[in-house]
Figure 1: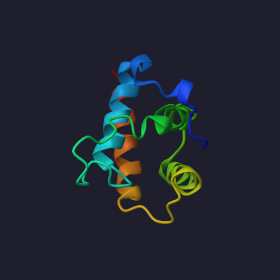
Figure 2: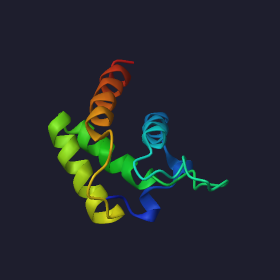
Figure 3: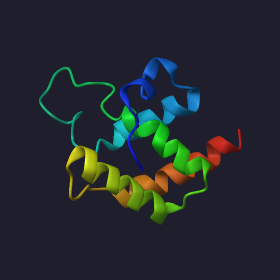
Length: 103
């Protein structure tokens, strides 16, 4: 998975589903932006992951594929070797995806 470019991660153009996924990423907060002492964290920190992750879901990715793909993007673009809660996040995203796909 390759993260989206700036033009493809503009929150103002997000659909309802994309906005929900952005919120899930924000709650997970893999790099700790929202738990830091910064009083004004960037609300769009993970928006570059939204559309690529959604594309993975639309193509039927399972938990293991999501985990490997997302970890690859986080390693390559965020310079992380380990992310706490990755498995739980991927499982939760799949539950969200299944429920949002049925509405």
